[in-house]
Structure formats: structure tokens, C-alpha cells
Image (cartoon, rainbow, N blue to C red):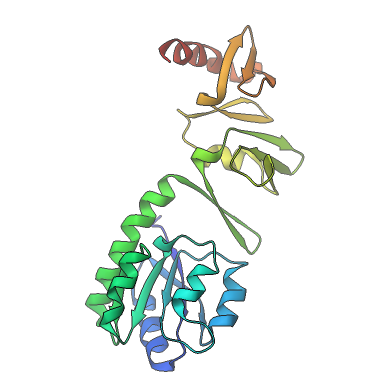
Length: 235
């Protein structure tokens, strides 16, 4: 199944919004999630939702596109500037926005711009755990994950990059197991997945993590023991 990327349009002018909506509908990898004619309304939405691509006008009343970016924690890799003024090109480079289009863009120019962003997002997805839970989308860099613990219908994802020491989500452990590279993240029992690099030592059927927590390897995951032992020898 081909990946689908959710898009949002933010532009105070109706004509550019309509053109972009038509282009998004024609593109096989894109889906229009929402469209806004006011930046403050878009800001409120984007604080709760994280689309993959944001087509953003720069000159808007109340709040410029650049000011909107500064108020959000969404990576610049997700934006494409759509502007009537080509002099704003340097702004896209300064902010690390992948590309910009002048109004009105042709469909070919639109595809070129989208292609640039998709290359960045493809790499981003490869290194990021993307979870849709309810109406929210969570993006968790795999490098931030040390280990995961299942608790009933929830999981706790531990790592020192989180605001607390863990992130609690309503999702099953097996769903995360399917999304994580098995050579780097090992299921030790039906309640725990651990990053190989976060394992300090192993003795008998017990693994000690770098935070000194101990986790027992279950019989059903017996092959993991020899794999860990071999990998620790190579480190």
C-alpha cells in the first residue's frame, strides 16, 4: 500500500486555496485534511493536529506565515511556502523550509515542490514512529525510545528526551512491535520491548538495562537471549 500524506492549506485568498485543493486531489500520495482562510484559526488547529504537509501563504492579516511557524513545534520540513512574491524565497532557505511556490503555481511546479518534501518526509518516516490514535497523530523519533512497557491497553514509552521520563499512549504493544525494526528493538516478553543499545548486560534469562532496571526474557522469546549475547560481544 502506498503511503498517504495528509495536507493542510493556509491562505487568506480563496483562488489559491481552490487551486491547491484541486492539485492535492489529483496527486496520488496526498490527501487534503483541512483548509483555512485565517491564520489564527489554523494555529489553533495545528497545535492539536500534525499534518504531513502544510501549504502556507506568507503574507496574511493577523498573523504571517513566518510568525505562525515560529509559534508551532512542527518541523520546517513539513511546510511549503505559497506566495505571490518571489523575494520571499530566501525566507524558505533561512527557515529550512524545503521549497516555495509563487502564485499561481502550475501543476508541474506543484509536483516538483511536493516531490522535494516527500523525499524529506520519507526519510523522516523511516526514522520516526508515526501513530494515529483517535484524532491525534503522534510522531516519535525512534532514537528517543529506550524501552517500552505494556500496561493493560496502554503502553509507556521510556526515554530521556520526553518531557517526563515516559510517554503514555493508548495502544497495544504488538502494534508498536510491528512498526519498529526488529534488529534494533527486541521483544523480551509480552510486556516489554527494549532497544538493543539500551541493554547493559545479560545474565541467564535476565537483562539489565542502562537504568539498572531488570527484565526477564520469556520462554517464547528464547532466541533473543543468544542474539543479545552475540551483539553485546561485538560492542
